[in-house]
Image 1 (cartoon, rainbow, N blue to C red):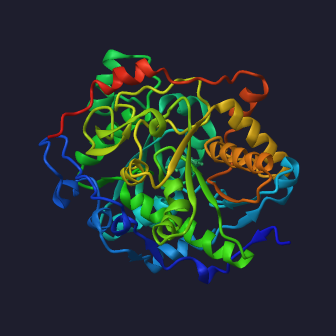
Image 2: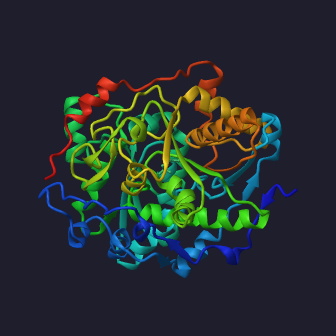
Image 3: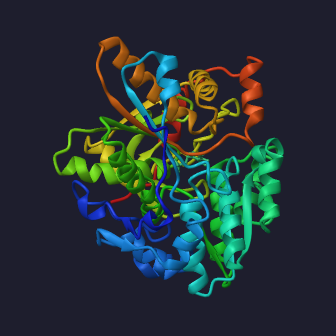
Length: 450
Ligand SMILES: Cc1ncc(COP(=O)(O)O)c(C=O)c1O
């Protein structure tokens, strides 16, 4: 029985799958935070090159991947699909468990799948410099890598608490040539406003996004890049699910349930969207997003219009949200701290096409350790949410004595996250459920969209 299913390089997908034409219901418009009117392509030009704006709104089902992008992706793609024989045995489950492993990219996660095309479309549009933000550093290192490959300058605003706690992600960004700035910083109006009110602010993804957006919007040579949430980011990640489908076909299998962890939605979209296309055509398949109970956007948020950032400079989208001024608890070790969710993922949840489940961080680390002791790979703490959900599905199959085929996305490795594992082993991690009152308070500040 095969353990690793590897595709040859010429099987790197030649097109991205755009789910927009297959969405149930009409997509809500994106709203300009200044005019409160729907944004047009021209409104987005200070932030993004036209190639990406076109993809953001495209209704074409298949979009060609440029050769220059596929050439760089070939450094690590196609990524392997594993059958988790040893984990299945450890769990004593009749379920078959497969995982698609995205930790083989140079940055160690799925994020370069979109960083590379984003840098490419900027390069051909004449952009000289990219400003972006990063939380734990996975996205920052990926955009730094991609900018390096296309000869672009790169500035990354890094959430301050991670800047101090994750020095090696910062070093990776510097190695790939990026300028890394702890956020909130004194370099932007958004950062200065936060520091005036909270001089000891730990920062948040929402604040760092505000700083990067302001940086890009106020410099002619600079554009902004986001590592999740947006339609074009979800689009770029669909190569994950396309490859997985082909690999499962080689194994003679098809999943009953597809699982991805959920922060902003991009790796979940990547593994899930190509299977959702099958579901729309009548396949009986469940699609499950796993998120932390400390940042329960999909399970406790509301489906409303909200800003993408704290300073209300980023466009307003209809999405599941905890409120743009949501402050994630410092105690949470596993990433996935964004207040919103991809509008595409949100609409699929709202329409009942997909399911969402919130999991506690202690159970996630337990599952990650069990996985690692069976399969060897050390998972990124973010990915451990998908492992928890996959293990729970496998244990349920055992209880019910049912066969089941489970596919999950192992979105990255955790080699640079060993401090979080240390915290787990020394008993410092606890499950923190974000209080409903705090969510209600934050939801008071949603924008009023007519
Ligand atoms: C390894 C890994 N998995 C998952 C995520 C969550 O992001 P998304 O929901 O966009 O996939 C991140 C975010 O940085 C990540 O680094």
